[in-house]
Image (cartoon, rainbow, N blue to C red; front, side, top):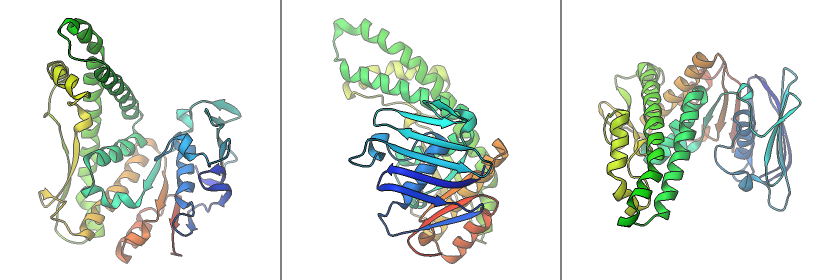
Length: 338
């Protein structure tokens, strides 16, 4: 699928905006704060069904009643996203849907400036990053994650409502039993999908890294399992056993929402041992593998969205970026001409 044009109305800072796209590479140049990232955000929403950074209320231009995204493709089809201030609709194949149908979702490799700092960022941001990446080509992972997050929200809301009361123990236990079952079930599914992804990534990580930096360093990405490698039954029992503690804290302390992704450089944590250039080469290698995995798993060449990352890279890494994404449609934002 090749994007021919992007049209926006009342999307963030844009009253009206039109971008005509090239089949290979399109460059969008503008000052910081001019709304370049918003264009990539709109493309992402039209192809994936949701924004990568905000709610519809936050996206809607202040003082307006609706926003509209229209993506026209070279095959003559189009996708329209319309938000009227209360609900969002997708118009595809002349049919209105409240959600973007799975068959109309298209994979994306999204590269943001903050991704280059992924190694040193918080565990929460790393989890969010990998959750988004794995969801690009694994629909089962996305579904399990949605169900897990819903169950976690429900359990946490109940924890905040209840107070420790000896006379109310049976009612509380019964209320939480079903959520514990769901968290254990989907938590283990998510963890297994994460392991599978890392196995695939690590199988190529060193080779792709060395195509960017010609040296003998070894890179690896591991999953730090909160609470260790346990069974679904163990997971459920731990939730049950830590119920009283969670009740006092007002949130669920144990679960895969506490797992972390750790970058290793020559068998040591990369944060603090690898240089700035080496860290950025690790992230680039990971992005190249991501695009390749998406193609192998889905048969589709993902659209590549690069948000002002060229200014963060030296000439060697810029050339590597161009070379490795030569088979994809790439849309780049930049402060300067490239």
